[in-house]
Image (cartoon, rainbow, N blue to C red; front, side):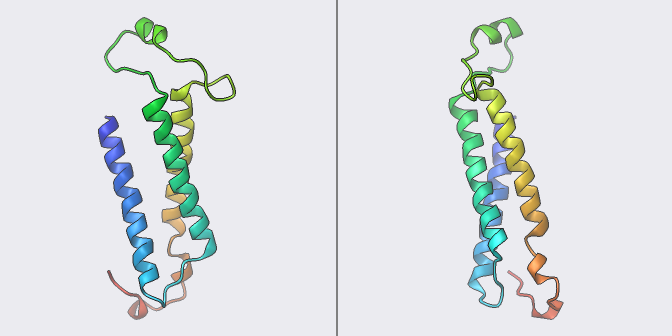
Length: 120
């Protein structure tokens, strides 16, 4: 399941980066500052989320809950949440920011006629 999630996530981020690079290749289309800030925050949030998933999660699928509790790592965020909790928090924030970016990515093109838009 993790491989499927990571495949979809990487595909989405690569597509967004490609789309922004193609928008900047055509000088008539500009990227608003909010888009650049949001794209940067999306990438940073995904990196933090994947860091906690890979290096601070001790969940092994298919084992009993008692064994999972014994193998659990200590709390790493605010001395309250372990790595798996941090993964859930940061991945949820990354998904939310990514969806928001996809929603507003072409807001600056709202007044442009269709025949003036570049297709790539």
